[in-house]
Amino acid sequence: MHEITGLDSMRAWSRAEKGRGRRIGFVPTMGYLHEGHLRLVDHARQRTDRVVMSVFVNPLQFGPKEDFTTYPRDIARDRGLAAGRGVDVLFVPEGKAMYPTEPMARVVPGPMAEVFEGAARPGHFAGVLTVVAKLFHLVEPDIAVFGRKDFQQAMLVRRMVLDLDFPIEVEVVPTVRELDGLALSSRNAYLNPDERRAALALSRALRAVEQAWRGGQADAVELQRRSIEVLKAPGVNPEYLALVDENLQPVARPNARTVVVTAATVGATRLIDNVVLGEGIAADPTVRAA
Ligand code: PAF
Image (cartoon, rainbow, N blue to C red; front, side):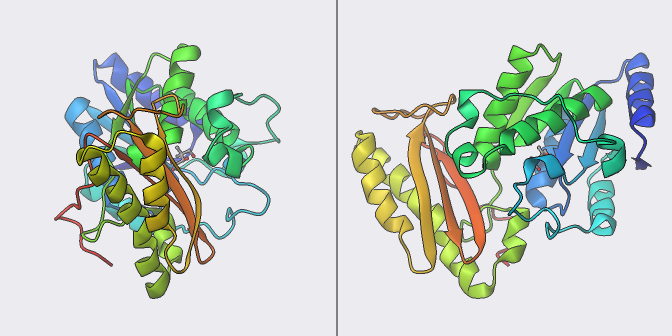
């Protein structure tokens, strides 16, 4: 595995590979890798000839009171995991190279970014789309792979690619869960054992909606009402739970493609999760509960 830090070197590598007829898959991350990120690599490897993974904790997408400085980082461990999974290039740009000055021009994500995560974290998605646009220009991938765990983010990236004519296919890979249902997230590292147990309320609430829907309940308001009760577990502060389509618009009569999105705070940690009704929540037998 090569490690590249320079922006020009990254672009030069990609162009040279493309010149040899190779297709490039790209997995953007903020590091502190877990199995969820590595599944994105697996997907990229199946679809392309070379895989680039970026590790960059992007200051632009953190609010002033958020965890930019304390966000978990372990580049040595990330290197080992990425190399072990077949990443060809680990792109680790420095903050000063990415943002030599405070950027003036940014991507405006539009109304889809004003609800749910965007409402809770003002400016977050402008920061995400701005860095993703920059990374796309530097890596020039054919395919970029995102996790469905960050559903709103993935839909916004898709929309940006469409609206701004990036010649890139965006692929979205299902969430990886621990055996007990907890969705993998770098922020799970913040949870103490009691909080980790409490955090299972999110996947339980999603499972409750899915089961009620499969059982014949077709009214979104009723599905939402029941599952919020499940989310209101001790130690859990529910923020939202809603049934939406891929444009993050509310759905009154859910179908198999409807996505249930939820967020809650457990202790000091804000967690998000979602389920596509037609797919359901499957614990992954290869991932052991912490
Ligand atoms: O999902 C993430 O890890 C980040 O939001 C991303 C897409 C790498 C942009 O910083």
